[in-house]
Each structure stands twice: as structure tokens, then as C-alpha cells.
Image 1 (tube, rainbow, N blue to C red):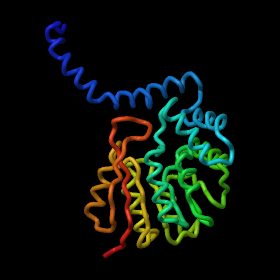
Image 2 (image 1 turned 90 degrees about the vertical axis):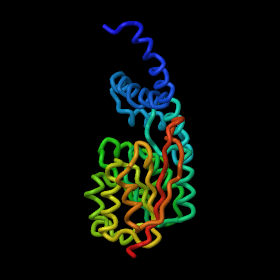
Image 3 (image 1 turned 180 degrees about the vertical axis):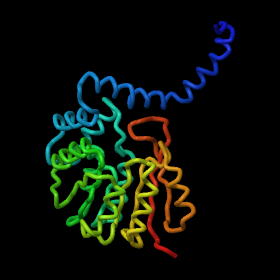
Image 4 (image 1 turned 135 degrees about the horizontal axis):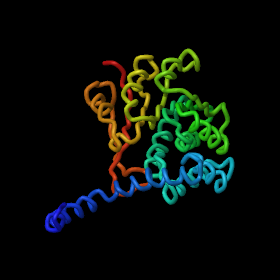
Length: 259
């Protein structure tokens, strides 16, 4: 039995921890507890609930409307780890500057970033989006088509990235990727980057953008960038999508080739 005196002694420490990590507690509540409760109540996955909201509130064929509906749902209703509007604007700018014709997305999730990338591409460009989860891929497919993009612009590939990347040249006739966006499992960032290198899919000037490299983080990926000497790179610092007070960042890499 803990005495009241000892409990009171620890109270300031407890309050300090709650105040310091309050944003993380809020994130845990929104991303985990609310999700578990609504999964049980609705019988639908979080991604399916997001799709229902977008379908009801967005304008078909209007990518901006699709993204706005997603952003409202993710900020006001439930948390989903999309790139979000703030970091999304950085991605938009990089895409406009690069004007890539061949783009690879690793991690379509429910289609938010896929739509965001596709709307910024020049005429004649093609986006290959990889998603390993079949249920999420089915939702992403609906979101992509709802936004007005056909198979000629966006091709969704449902398989793990480490199985698809070695077959991009043989199965999809890809010789070089102009732009790669990574937003899948963070532990896969480094092995997938090394696969892209090993299979010769990156050329001098190819750009890779990797989200969430600070939170939840991709430390092995960042260590590799510091040591390998193959890239000019920097981190665009920001806050975690749809959250306050949690520092995050996106890595921007430009492949320089083997020196």
C-alpha cells in the first residue's frame, strides 16, 4: 500500500510528464483508442469509414475536393497517417519543380497521397503505386477512380514492395524512375532504397521523398544517407500530419550516382 505522502511526492513528476507528452497522449487517443472503439461499433475499418465520408462529401472527378474531404475527416473525426496538407504542399512543390514522367509510390494506403501526386503530374506522366494490404488497396482504387484518374495515369500494384521492385523493369518496362515517394513501413525505407539502387532504377537526378523520417522515424535509412555518398539530401522539418507539437520531417534525396 503506497502512503499518501509518497503519492503526493510523485504528483509533480506525473503532472510534468503529462504536460510534456500531452500531444503524444492525444495522438494515442485519436489513433488507437478511437479506432478500436469505432471498429467495434461500426464493423468497418478506419479506412472504410474514411472512404464513406469522402464518397458522401467530396465532388467526383475533383482531386482537390477529395483531398479536402480527407483532410477534414483526418483532422476532425479520426486520425489517419496521410502526408496531410502541410507536408503535402512541400511534396506538391517538389513535383512541380521536377515535372517527373515516371513516378513510383511506395505505400498507397487509402489513396490520399496517390491523388495528391497524380494531380501534380505533367501530361503523359504515369504513377505506379504499390500497396501490400489488399483491403486498403481496394479503398485506394476507389479513391483514385473517384478523383478521376484512369489506369493510363495511375496503376495500382497490390503486392509487397520488395517483391514488386525487382520486377519493375521486366513486368512494367520501367528503365528509370524520375521520382519516388516513400510512405509505407519505415523499416522498409532502407531495404527498398537499396533495391532501387541494385536494380538500376535510379538515374542521376532521380528524386526520392520519404515521409515520417523523424516520427515515428527511420534511423537506419538516415544513417545510410549520411554514409553512402550517393545522394544530395536534406530534411524538410514539419509537424506530424493532423497533429500539434509532434516534430516530424520529410527527407528529400537527389541521386548522384556512384562516384
